[in-house]
Length: 336
Ligand code: SF4
Image (cartoon, rainbow, N blue to C red; front, side, top):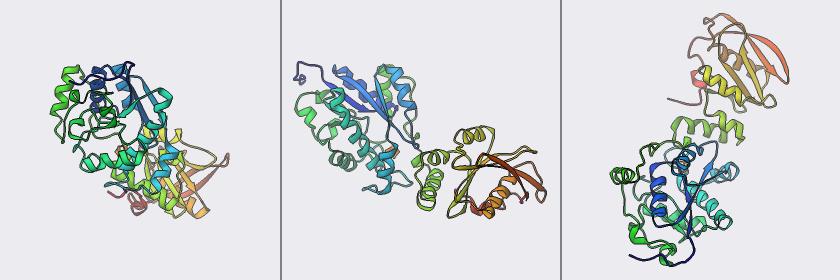
């Protein structure tokens, strides 16, 4: 066994998703006496909730950073492209390691690490894609993957003796058995499932995101958050409508309501959804939005319905004919 060749405490900064692999990679390093801190990033597409939970569970300190602006810049043209949906996984990891690397000096860390496992994800965790991230993030040689280190070339971190390579693992592939056994050893019983947590891998969300970025041509943060809730209708190239599907969604939509940029629609005399219109809106578009909204109230098809329009701090009513159910299905942005 190699001994760690330094008299001072070695410190490592790890990317944390909150999943089991993140937790195990950090605990493996802690076993070697390494002082471990986590960093987790937030954007409208993913958050640090699971990482916060993992930090609470393990006592490992966590830094949380919002990287939305830089992320949206990267999303314009990810060098390695997108995955099956709008997930630019390789450039996403590159950006995360670049951001984490920039913090190393600030917190006195010697190297970076993550819970990535070779071959666990078909595209983003192959040896080549792990290498792509190292080469492009600006911290080549300083990224350790403790769970798969034995299968990867020796890093500068190991060469310098900051970490004992012989105590790192050689896990590969999609089986979770080795991780489950390790979790048992460490007494970790609660952890989120390995997949999930990133909206960019979701087909429906990706369709709505493409529409927002390439047709509406905006990266506005509130609109990005709105993509998570409700039915989305493309009214024309410059205007869209979001309609809540139930009470909980109405509430979430209204939490994102900004009277400066949204026109709010609601049927005030019958139960129905909250709806927001935004973009460049003329009377014809507004009438269309109100008609669609009336289709989700308790009004019968063909009945006249009054929709309240909240615009520029004023309220007025417009009357529309309630459409047949599904009449505007072709305007829905998300196709099944
Ligand atoms: S799944 Fe989402 S958060 Fe994870 S690497 Fe891909 S784009 Fe980034």
